Length: 229
Image (cartoon, rainbow, N blue to C red):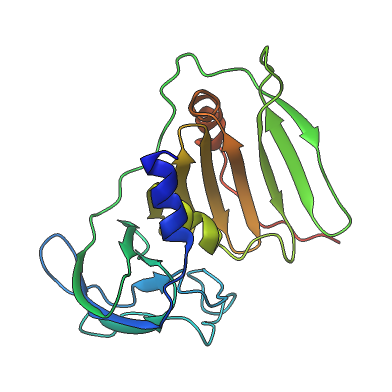
């Protein structure tokens, strides 16, 4: 078993007893960040920035007016998010006091292929959502990005298990509320999600080479919720 796989297995295991993690979230200048999110605690929440469209769930954890937070959880990791900033994953092994410094985000463009590969599309609509597969034809198949929306299509963030299990993880949260997160479990198992509440574009379980192709597709997709009539 590789070291990466061992790390993934250990991270996926929830800690036996609940741990309490508390601390303060600041920007690069050391100023407290108010209303930063503490996500992936194991509770189901909806991630969004519009309080009228997405009211805070009972399990939402946010920083207070001094940038402080406190959460008790059995999750092996949480993610600190704030619109306009790069997200930060924190591993949890027991009670701990932390200081989290968030960096102002940069546009997350992962495509390094020029010219960008040509793509084709295929409708993947279902009874309760609309979806389009944006794919690239290669000699090994048709890898693609699935982009869709619907009443239950996305809660606005990647799944807890993907965040917890990934040996590498990175993410940003745009001012619009869109989260762009990516990671890998090992050298042949990459994933990426761009999501807002009710809409998402993603690819899962692809090789590094395929991920490099699909990132050129993902960089151009901004998921939007479209009401199904």
